[in-house]
Image (cartoon, rainbow, N blue to C red; front, side):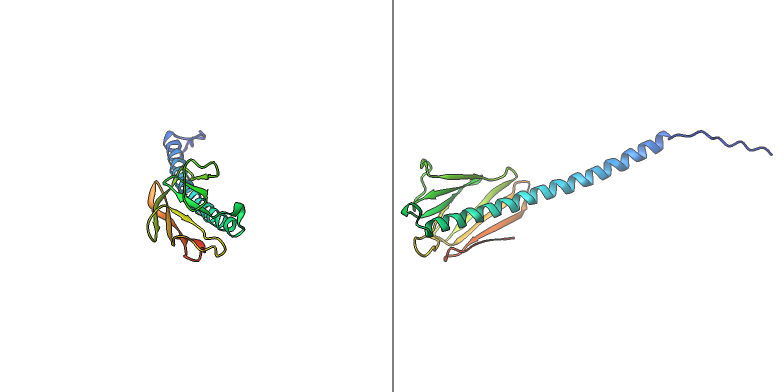
Length: 158
């Protein structure tokens, strides 16, 4: 009995399709993970920046910079640091912080209403206690709350 074995080497089309399919599945999993982490990172960064802006406004007030109070005004896509106790969109002293594109301010809830908070001279107390909620535009269930106490202490929470 003579058996002939074929010694042809190479890939069949089925093997090639299987390898391409496996690579495509792995790429989709990696892309989904990357996209998810990018959004969470933008949300965390935006919350940290707003906390820093609030603390900066409080520090400027306590330092009596320009003998004035400082505060923040909140809109859906930005926060604006202003000088004084009343926000004016036309003031040249305003400092604008635009939120990263995947993030928005979904709610501003201050005692007494409004979208502005400023800090009192000498005490650093907030004019209004409350919270600001940031969320991902693509996933409203992923959000961060920034809490402002009546004493002026500011912190972020999930």
